[in-house]
Length: 190
Ligand SMILES: Nc1ncnc2c1ncn2[C@@H]1O[C@H](COP(=O)(O)OP(=O)(O)O)[C@@H](O)[C@H]1O
Ligand SMILES: [Mg+2]
Image (cartoon, rainbow, N blue to C red; front, side, top):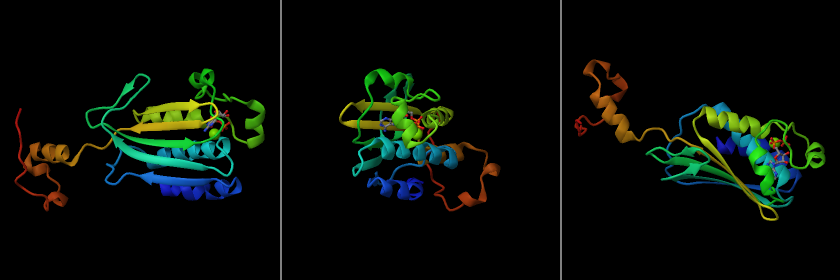
């Protein structure tokens, strides 16, 4: 999916001389969600990083699993979270703007944003989709250094949990596709 985002924005990045680097940790668990909507989230964030980041600079997209994650009013569940950060080395965003950044039509520098194109809706949409996925968006920015937008998403239940649930189901409910799974799954009854 991130590669897809990369391809879609390749032309735009090239125009500004920006390199987009994607770095996804090995063995990331799948996340629960709508692929099209999540693609929109990262399209918006990478688009912003290209637009408002440094021309001729690098935008990094880093995906990793974290054991604990906290964002305003949100905390990861017991399986932790998949965190995807979009990092740019642009002008950054003065702190006083951060709380309002995801409001519809909110722009830090209206003239500059108008010149760069865009609707001012991108981050509002990002926030909406991330909320619908019961995830979180964290914005971290230092004026003069750049910005990091991190999306936290719920990982799909780990295989062990799924196996325990499958084992707990009445035998008749077991899908035939599971026949190749080991039959001696240890089941702990509580
Ligand atoms: N990576 C970033 N660096 C600096 N400012 C940003 C960044 N991303 C978003 N912004 C600021 O947040 C505003 C809102 O972003 P967004 O909702 O995507 O609207 P748009 O990109 O259409 O202007 C932008 O106009 C810009 O001022
Ligand atoms: Mg935008």
